[in-house]
Amino acid sequence: MNSFTPFQIGPFTCTPIDAGDIWLDGGAMFGVVPYTLWSKAIEHDERLRIPMTMRCLLIESSHTGHRYLIDNGIGTKYDAKKCDIYGIPYGADPLMESLTQAGVDPSEITHMVFSHLHFDHCGGTTAWDSAGTKLEHRFPNAQFVVNERHWAEANSPNARETASFLRDNIAPIGESGRLVTVQDNYEFEPGFDVLNIDGHTIGQQLPRLSDDSHTVIYAADLFPTVHHVPVPWVMGYDMRPTVTLTEKAQLCATSVQQEWIWFMEHDAHHVFMTIQQDDRGRYKGVPLGASELPF
Ligand SMILES: [Zn+2]
Image 1 (cartoon, rainbow, N blue to C red):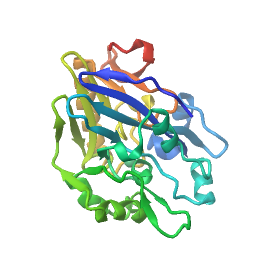
Image 2 (image 1 turned 180 degrees about the vertical axis):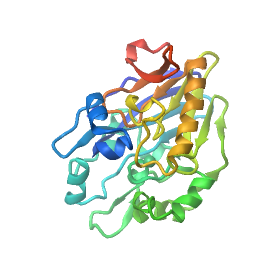
Image 3 (image 1 turned 60 degrees about the horizontal axis):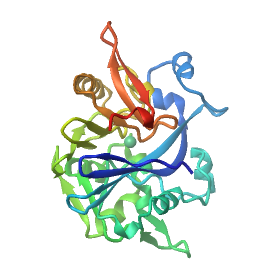
Image 4 (image 1 turned 45 degrees about the vertical axis):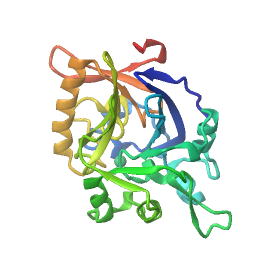
């Protein structure tokens, strides 16, 4: 269990929440980048999987009193075989442990904000009851906030994306009576909005927090690790890789100009990074330790 120090930006107290580690196929994570290159950037195990994590973000607003949680990991619904595939300990529940450690009860979450609804981002919404027959909600009072274009996509996915949208995850969200679908670039409150991008999946939303001098943006699946910042290093999982190329180039340029700080959801080793551009115009992710944060 990782423990994290909260950080403050404007009226928002932000606490990283640990929803556990996950091991994913290195080849799929780096798309067309050959093994000889990606294996120098990051370690892998004997099954050619790389270590990743599922780092959610709790945002408590002193302005509205809202408690937002960004994503909730893969959850606890997998059997032992599935857990082995993803290298997650069977029977563990790191999300709830981490929320407890942060001093928050799941019933106090007012908004579950989903970057998108792939299985490793929304699996923690529900869990099987003790008999293993019925799905129970774990955030009984939260609104479920999803981009409206993404909600449509998640409910009629193409054949390549269908394995990422699991019925046991999506259906209870739709049937909860608490689903709120929002338009692009939605603003929750002053200083907290989202940016939308379509390369990884239609309508992915990147939550962004800003005050007068700083911007922190949740990387979600745009930059799963700091090694994914160079523009051609695009995941094989992306539905529209050429769209990702354009989105990365644009967001990298803005990030350099405005000195954004990226909060890394999946990078097992780095919680924060900035983006720098070298004299040949290439972008790279530069990890930032908690003590190096400018706020
Ligand atoms: Zn995804």
